Amino acid sequence: MNATTGTRGGRGARERILAAAAELFYADGIHATGIARLTDVAHVSTRTFYQHFPSKNALVAAYLERFDAETPMPAEQELTRTDLAPRERLIQVFATLKTRGRRPVRGCPFHNAAVEAAGEMSEIAETVARHKDAFRQRLADTAAEAGIADAELLGRRLALLYEGATALSTSRNDGQAAADAYDLAKELIEGGR
Amino acid sequence: MNATTGTRGGRGARERILAAAAELFYADGIHATGIARLTDVAHVSTRTFYQHFPSKNALVAAYLERFDAETPMPAEQELTRTDLAPRERLIQVFATLKTRGRRPVRGCPFHNAAVEAAGEMSEIAETVARHKDAFRQRLADTAAEAGIADAELLGRRLALLYEGATALSTSRNDGQAAADAYDLAKELIEGGR
DNA sequence: ACAGAAGTATAGCGATCGTTGTACTTTCCC
DNA sequence: GGGAAAGTACAACGATCGCTATACTTCTGT
Image 1 (cartoon, chains in turn cyan, red, orange, brown):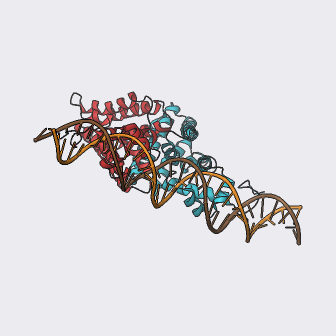
Image 2: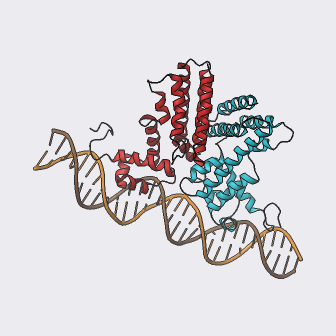
Image 3: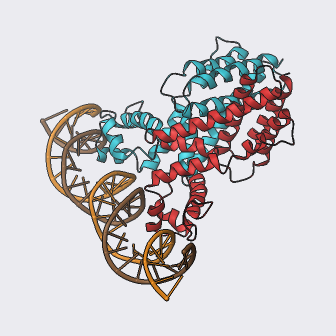
């Protein structure tokens, strides 16, 4: 039994499929990424793909869940650091956002998935909403830990700034929005005593 | 000669096509909206469609240009109001964002188009970037008109908040993000003296 | 009234989409 | 070393995509 994949041996096709999905769905979009391209990048045959995932939609769902569970966003990793004071952790979230401002950045994979899903695939919209809520809640919890007066408000405001910076990186990929978000976030965090 | 369409009479098929595009591209997404659905909603035959637009991509481009030129975003209309002081105009931008928070809201049509365009259609990404820049500049200009010290900074910060609120409306359509953006924007505008 | 432009209906093109079928080879565990 | 699981190659299915062709019908300006 393979611990990481949950499958019974083999050469880890499932892992490579998920890795290819993470790369292609994010870079080129979900609709624009066909099964052929996906299996080509993953070095997996079409048949094998459908032995691991019943459909492309299932892969999309797995792709988002994978981000949520095993590959937490860099920003969220900062919130779990024990070597920093809570206030510093919040600031660090926006510092990494600024640092990560190297190409290619194409916004938030969750948000992008929700945009592409549009009317169809409402389960995707739900997953995205859950992710956004969880992130905002983590920010608020950290703010509360820092002893900030209205922690929920700060959590929502920081989530708002973070969303704005990532969204703007889709169309303009200079680090300006991230830098602005960092500065304003820092003011809000240090101001809320 | 028809003044609004630039065509020579007829029953204004071009207008109906653009109206259908504005509705469907925004609500269902660009990829998800096929020519068949488009012509059906516009009450136009396939042949007529291709007599007005050489391709679907051309319609997408026209759809975005139309938003930019003839159907300015509600937020931008507020910036042109002459019955309000510049500071009030800035606040009004976020007030309309809050009011408009009724269903269905699905983020910014420009941003969504950029997400869907992904790798292909770089001209779309360019159009979106130009739109975002123009909006931010208008905010900055209004801030300068209000005599605010660092008007460019406030312009960028307000654009950041606006983007965050619209982006969050894609996955969670309560008015919370818009309300938060309004409050924080108001503080920033009134604080910058 | 009539020429010409605009619009309609419908069938079908080639390409690509997601998905499945058939037949075969490799890898791993006992 | 044998058997089951996992993976491979490749052809092809039906559906849908964007787009074009053919043939006909309004509508409009002079």
